[in-house]
Amino acid sequence: QVQLQESGPGLVRPSETLTLTCVVSGDSLGGFYWSWIRQPPGKGLEWLGNILYDGTTNYNPSVKSRITMSLDTSKNQFSLRLTSVAAADTAMYYCARMRGSGFFSNDYWGHGNMVTVSS
Amino acid sequence: QSALTQAASVSGSPGQSVTISCTGLSTDFGAYTYVSWYQQYPGKAPKLLIYNVDTRPSGVSSRFSGSKSGTSASLTVSDLQADDEADYYCSSYTTTTTHVLFGGGTKLTIL
Image (cartoon, rainbow over all chains, first blue to last red; front, side):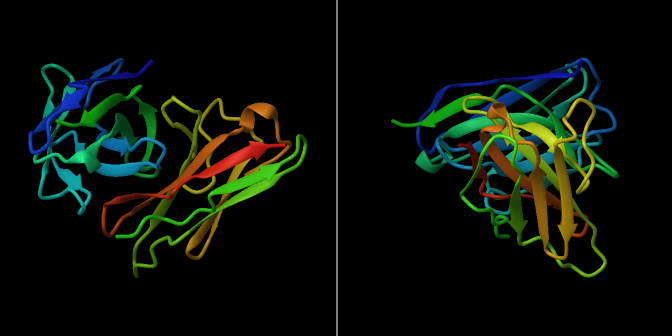
């Protein structure tokens, strides 16, 4: 059974950098896209971007200037780095696995990591 | 890129059927758009219900079905049950942009 687990801070100061990590168990990173999706309190889902197992990235234009995703295949994990955070970045951050060709849907999700941006 | 559009809420009685619509899918020439649907209970992560427009993952009830026509997609929930009360999100992936869009979500209330 594939499982994903996010880890990271619960509170980040405005203008600082948010770093989240997602550890994958039950399967390797190879052959899939790995996604970050967030959900502000009481609001809908927002795709932030994904990273393919070969390191190719796709980012949402709304955060493209501030976001970096990376992989660590030795630890079977991937990460999100979001710079210059503001209150609008307060959200539950989910990592998810996206199957590729013929699917392009997120079939496994982590439980989420709530991040609050506040001084 | 704009989010996909969904009605904020829909309701139905047990045993009835409801359809949730999602508009604004890409019309890029030569592109293929993959549509997915997710169910989310309060405080929980979303769960994949439908992928590639109309395919159910293993374990998802046949009461959930999807379709697509032009720039719109629909999720139909048949034989409504109490535990269908949740938020439902559509999502699209278009081969030309390689970006993912989500709809704003529809809250399904069982009367």
